[in-house]
Length: 182
Image (tube, rainbow, N blue to C red; front, top):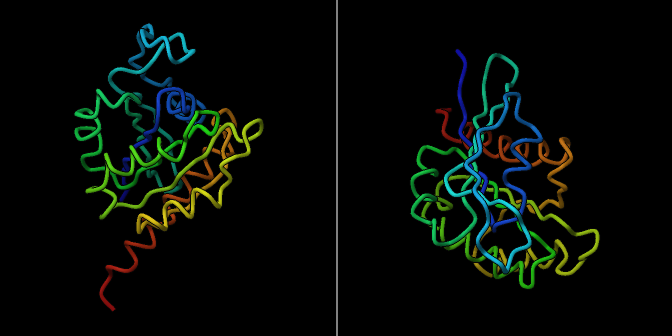
């Protein structure tokens, strides 16, 4: 029997959600980008609805990948898109002025869901912006009572995005194994 997994990508505008999904999707990704009207972000277009892509696993299983809009003003869509998600990937952009505060926004925005679904954090743009380092992210998560894998990622590299997805799927599988009767 094949299974379909739903994974949600979230993070700030420009963190790479659309690019990550396009990098690994086996189908042309569905994107709902429009011209960016936020002058504080040097980006031509931004997602206002969702991104969607799909990858296949062994045994006919599929992973459906959804991406949220990054702006907090669209947080009502976050709650809709996270429904039935088996896991969450939060992308952080290390080139932003305060990426740890940005991460906190998404941890708080998905706090209820993060109490019951696995999460992996992908930190991008570390090459030219090494601070904060991965340990700072882990320390911040620990201070909030959270323990999620934190992985440096270049969302343009298929292997990096697949590592994030594999990390999340391993958590999902481990959780399913814990629920089996012994």
